[in-house]
Each structure stands twice: as structure tokens, then as C-alpha cells.
Image: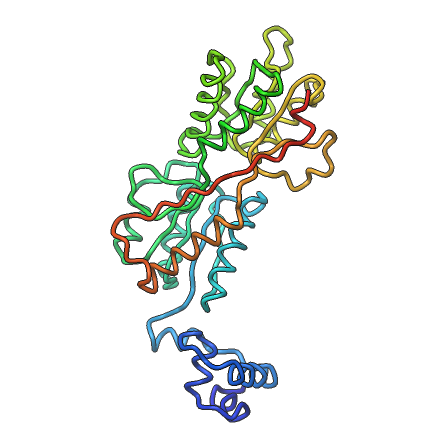
Length: 336
């Protein structure tokens, strides 16, 4: 089994130089770095990170927990975080909480036991006790929350401007002549869902349209339940909404299923705008107007903040708050 000494011998450099190239802890000239990398490839050398972490108390590993990796928004966040980590010589362990608070608690404990140097967290839809987050921070493990920001906890966070983004989507429907606009939300235990509902209200009020509470439909994150909710509210033509605004892309699929079950076509019968790009959008006819969140940028920015905390670059007292703008991609589903 090749050793770091053998790599140094083949590359014609010191063991320390090889270590610097592997860890990225010290800048190494480009010619020396290329020699070391060529020797590593030639020998098929794999550093023993466990042994190194025991010696240095550094694992150069981050953890990221998301609710559901099958929802396309979250893998994009992970990719962004991974890019930020890789640039600075860190690796990422990703895990899935299944939107379950107890599973999330187990994963946080597991990552702590694995000695990750920091954690990126998209909180589960089930209410997350403050203690889950404060316990990690009290152990001097930096944490950044993404997308879903916990209540009553001072923690670094990166998300979009939820209120502004929702207001933009609903205002677009109003500009297209829709007036009876329903909103389908996810669990209102999540702050981003509440803020998007707030943006919906503000858009209506700004246009002089009275908020009709019967058009505010609080859903779950289960597609069958969202579809059933839409069937219940849309299959009867009396007083039916003429457009629907959905607060997350996952639920949008349930809304579209509800449209189908009621025999409604968008935009002929009903307008539609949703948060988040649908990865199978090219299969929808007509195409879906969406509020696009910069998921990759959210992950990358959160990763940078976390690494700055770990390396002592970010010295700001109190939490760092980053809110990125979303964009509206207008397609056929909102066109009258």
C-alpha cells in the first residue's frame, strides 16, 4: 500500500509539501502541486483522513441535512455547498431527514459524533425544537440554516426573500387579469411558508383586492393530500378560483393532479404560478410559470459562510443573514 513518503519520493518533494497539497492548508506553487498530483495518480494513493484527523483534530468534513433528496431543489443546494467546500479542501456528508424531526435529531447527533467541523441544515417540516440547534452550537460546531429558517433561534442563515418572491408571483397573476386567486401552502409550522402567504396577502392588498379567506388553502407536503384538497375546492364551479398560486414546487405536482382530476386545463380554465422549477417541466403542456429560487447559489453561499466561521474569517457577532432574490420565469400557465 503506497505511503505519503513514497508520494514525496516520486514527486521529488518533502512529505510536508505532499501534506499541504492534500489538505490545501498551505499554498503550494503550481509546478510542485502538479508534481504531487501526478505522483498520487501514479501510485493510486489515498490519504488516511481518519489517521490525520486523530493527529490534527481536524476532519475537514462538513455535514448537510435536507428534508428530501428526491425533490430537485435540495440536490441543487447540496451541489452548491459541495462546490464551496471543495474549493477550500473540505468534503461533505449529505443526509436525508425525511422531514421528520426525530430523524433530524438522530442525524445531528450522528454528525456530531463523526466530528464534522460544521453543519448545513434545512429544517424538517415537523416543528424543530430550539434545543436541536442550540445543542450543536453550544458544542462549538458552526451551523448555517438554509431555505427553511427556524423561529426564535439566532443562527446564520441563507434563503430567498420569501415575501417579495411570493408577492411577485401573485402580482403577475393579477396583471394577467386574474382576480380570484387561491393559494396552496405547505405546513404553516415553516416560517418560509408563512412568509410566502404574507406575500400573497400583500399582493392582493396592493391591488385593492380583498383577501378571501376561503381561497387560502393550507396543505401538507404529501401530494395525495394536496391533490385531494384541490379537488375538494375546485371541482365545484360555483365560486371557483380563477387562478392558483402554490408556495413550493413539491406541492405544485399535487395541484396539477387536482386540476387534472377536476377536468381543468391551465390557463384555459385556471391560471397557475408556483415556486420552484419543476424538473419535468418540458413534459407539461402548457409550460408552468415559476418563481425560480437560486438553489445552487443558496447552497454555495451557505457553505462559504460556514467555512468562514470554521476558519475564523467570519468574526461578526450575532447571526449572519443572507436573503437572495428570486426570479419569475413567465410561461404559458399564467397567460390568459
